[in-house]
Image (tube, rainbow, N blue to C red):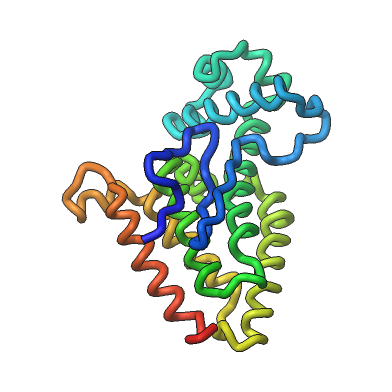
Length: 247
């Protein structure tokens, strides 16, 4: 079964490999600083990117361990190995840093959708590739998924504007792709938004609810074989449910 990460290559915290296509297309590497700079921040040169990458990486670690309420800018600065004033220079406040981290996480997830879910692909390849890429996130950076889930469970106040703006726009783009496939007779008439909700929940649960899974599976941690089984199961459910044979 194809893997989203080449054998022996494990994405680091500061970067990860986007799933390669089945035809051998090389993967793309995306770091934590791919989003556009916020208004008022210094324009991103190499030192800026390195510093913000360190800060976002440290913030992910600290927020995952302590939650929003327990995390402090001082703790994040220590984890990043940077002076605390640097965090305020690049992000302004803990609130702004937390929002930037959340937006960055979601933006990187959606980059996978932009990579895989395009009308030029056949639906089966596109959907299975996206499922594989989303499971790679759950496997390699579960903390990011848990931070995002925690934000949603508390009302999503830090990223309300992002969800209403950028996320809706990205979902609308995907809807045009699915509409094309439906018009071509390659995809069943399912609601795009609810299909995406299913894809997101099925894949992200392997990060958010891994504690439950390891107990049911009678193991200490989810292994590659578990993620391979998850990929096969989710892909079978989705492809048989929405892709028309021969599409």
